[in-house]
Length: 326
Ligand SMILES: Nc1ncnc2c1ncn2[C@@H]1O[C@H](COP(=O)(O)OP(=O)(O)OP(=O)(O)O)[C@@H](O)[C@H]1O
Image 1 (cartoon, helix red, strand yellow):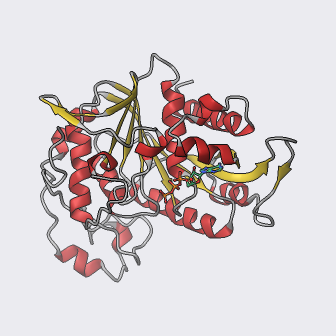
Image 2: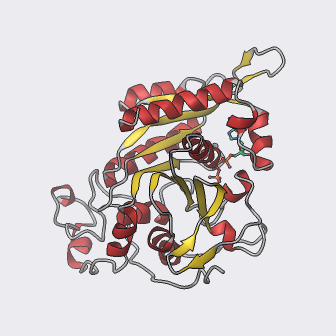
């Protein structure tokens, strides 16, 4: 059985102050307070005087484990509820549709793990062996790891502060026996918090291939995506592109499309132009996506001919193309 989530190292947390300049190296960096970007920053003196902690002892183990993962893709969103976990699941399912490809899905949304439900494996538990913790397998070539598997029930809340969350993420990266993976999709909580910084820090050496940003068309969601873009740029995380989710409603009967979020529809297009980031595509609002997720079924398999499936597949093809895998 799975060892307690309490166990393991508690790595250093690091942060970028909210009033940090562009290209802030972060308070844990050896360059804290000393980089060009720090000149004139109100935090410069504090950062320069605080001794950076030594390298995290988990890093070499993480690097060793991650050498057997070819591609690591992080799924981000500024706001909650925009469909990030649903997209991460479809992405993993689509990769795994090719039997030759080994895929992992890691859910680091520690306080709101929805991946086990979306993949229909919420009642599963994690087992450990001498090789590490075994992911839960949805099918032979699709393994999943989530804090959701460690909770007694889906009603139980995880109330952890940053260092404890970081400790679990380090364990997911170094102790999970993913085996050789072609793709590791990492689902994150909304916003830019400890979990995101940990992932970036822990995978710095092995490298993250890119981030996919999910948004809905409303301006409030787009504002948060701008912050997410700023975060990615500050930490040097490559952005593969933006996906506009719940973008219009296609009636399943008459196939006509209604713009639910008028007049802000098209916001992701504008944002993409404004920021020079690729708009990977738009996924329409389709109530069957929510139903499939609630029943733990792959929407792509259930409704392969739907406009939403066509959009998902087009977006996933673009991601593969950008990564040079197509
Ligand atoms: N295109 C879509 N059409 C209809 N429903 C959708 C669509 N995308 C996602 N949903 C539904 O919207 C809800 C929120 O999706 P999801 O849990 O993936 O969001 P999230 O961004 O990961 O949220 P959080 O970060 O707060 O966990 C779910 O019920 C999901 O089934």
